[in-house]
Structure formats: structure tokens, C-alpha cells
Length: 494
Image (tube, rainbow, N blue to C red; front, side, top):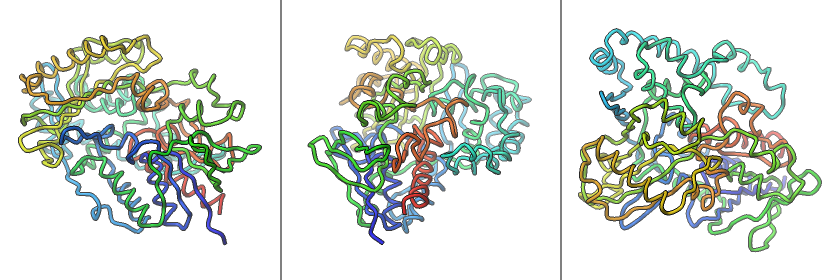
């Protein structure tokens, strides 16, 4: 049997994972990446001896990543040095700090001191949410390419545990009476760009996953995962073409036949995998009229995640701050409403700061720090004009809040270099539709069969990987999307 050719658009986490799995299975894999490095939003940003992750900084459900390497005949630890974090992060409010840990005894001790009477909720949370996780996880590993998959045994078994009609905050009310404590177990909704007051209750598995399994750091940054995958692909005979943007997917009738590069070269392929941002891909990678259900004029009718304002700071000082620090707005609920509902910039912002240099000496010169700062903001559907004046003003407000709410009181005096990515930059320079950093929203009406399908429903021999398809945004689910698509290619294209 002739070797089948797979053309993959984009060397982000999904494209790299799919490439690794398919190369191991005997396919001829060619990945085409417009940038000069692999990784997409899981690539590194380097400046003056500092290294930053562009996007993801939390590695959870590491067992999934290990499985991907195992399926490629490799061992993750041969390529990446992983370090578990305990405590996982610091949650900073105006009136208290909490240091979540996978150690249940330590969690109860903290809650007894801060929220007496709520400590029993820790065990109740673990007991009940383990059941939800055990029922839901098999559903996330299935494809929903046909409607009958909505009636599959795993999903039917999971239905009673989805708490349909309830929000993440509703569910955490089953365990904790204090709202701020519930927020400590629901802020993970921001991982998918949603409000915990609106995020479907089923996503309670996210805090459970963290609290039961912990989170890891990769020495050198999570971008090292992308580098490792690229190395495995090369070892397995696959090819990665950097600085090679794709102009379009070539379609004959309703069948994808390959791709056309920006330089005019034609690459024929038996199957095409799209790892580009979904909305951007639908808007730019097909000739007019090919895409109907997800046509550009219909894309804006969908719900999208928030965006993020990013600061990458090279600092000539080391601060004794935690690896991960979430600084909550004075009024977190109103801050979330500003971002999600009102689509306006909030002066009372929440900020995430990663100070990985506290545990990782490789990402900054000795005695220095590489600080990663993320501020959730409205996406470009809102009315904010990200001109230079707005960017400068917002940047200064973010720094002021960090200095007020952390021990980094002199941060502004120690910045040696910096890079900013605004929501407009995510949209215009990084090709994210509406600058929505976490892709299509994860509402019930945009999940499973109702989300763009891994075996793309509009074009035959075309498959999707990444946060815009099933199971959704976030590294573990993106890895699963790649495995699902690789399995579908095995099923339909061999």
C-alpha cells in the first residue's frame, strides 16, 4: 500500500501532536508553519537572554502528554525535564492569600484558618468531582463526527453528572458557603475565557484535575514541549517547513486535495489537517463559497472567549514571589462582567503573573527574572481601540497594580526589556479571530457535536485540531483533539 501524504497547516501543539502520532503510524507527514519557530502560542519568545512562553504556562493532566509520546514510541522525560509545583499557585485577594496544593490536609488547614466551617467541603469536592471526571473524561476522548455519537454509551452515562443548567459557581456552592472560597475553585473558567458565573457546571472537572493531579513546570518553559515534539517528528521521518505560510486549502468538489503555499507552490495530499485558529482559517484558507455552515459572515454570530493583554518583562532582579500568582480584582464579579458581558476595559483588573525564575534558572540571566503577565480583557468584538496611547495607559495601570499587590514594589525600576501583545496584536499579527485567545466559547451550544468537528463536516479529507474543535481549548484537550483526528484518519483514510 502506498504511503499516504498528510499536509498539516500550523505547527502549534495540535499540529505537532498529530504529526508525531501519524508519522509513527507510517504516514508521510509534512507540516507547514508560517513562523520561523514551531509551537504557535506554545512557542518561546526570546529577548536579551530572557525566555518566555508565548501562551500556556500551566501544564496539567501531564499523563495525556506522556501518552502522546508513548504512542509515538518515545518517553516524555527523555525530552523534557518536568518539575511538579507545590503549592501550585498563590491566589491573592485584597484581604487574604491562599496557596492551593494537591495535599488535601494542607488545603483543609488553610481553609480552617481563612474560612472556618468550610473545611469539610474539601473532601466532598474531591469525592463528588472525581465521579464527574471519571464519567466525563471518556466523552472528551471520543469524536462527535456524526450525530449518533451524541447517543454513545459514555455520553449517556455522563449526562446525569453534567449538572445541565447550572454554572461552575452554582456547583462550588455545594461545597463552600463563602463566595471568595468558591472563586478560588472556579477561576479556572478563565482558562477557557469564560465567566465562572456562566461557565457550564461540567467544567468543575478543571479545578478537580488541578487539585487531584497537580500541575507541572517544564524547565526552559512549556515551549520545550513543542521543541520536543518537533524533534520526534524529525526522528520519525516527518518534515517541518518553517517560514512557509499556507495560502489556502485546495478543494475539488467537496474534497480537500492538498494546499497552496503563499509562494504559489502546490502540495498534493491525501488528507489535510488544519491547526490554524479556527475562525481565521474559515475566513482565509478557503475559496469563497466553499465554506457554508462556518462561513465568514456566520462566524461573528458565534460566541467567543475573552482576549488577553500580555506583558513579557525582562527584569534585572529576582523576586521572592511564587511561580504562579493570580491577583484578583477588588470586585472580581464586576471585573468578569466588564470583560465578558459589557466588553469594556476594567480599571479594577485581575492579573496573572508567572515568576518561573524562582524555580527555573534557565530562562533568565543569573540574578534576573523573566516575568510573564497576563490580563484578561474583552476580545475585539468590543469597542476598545488598542492604539499606542491605550496600550501605554493600560500597561502602566497593570504595572501599578502588580507593585501595589505584590512584594515587587520597585518592579518598574528593574525592567530591562519588554514585549507587549494586545488583543489587536493577537488578531492582526497572530491570526486569532477577534483576538479571542481561547478560541470559540465553550458554551453548551458550542460543544461536542455542535463544535466544529475533528473530521471537518464541510470538506472531505479535511481534519481539525486545536482549541477550535472538540474537545476544546487548553493543552491537554488540544493534545486529545490531535489524537482523535489521527484516529479518524486511520479509520477513514487508510
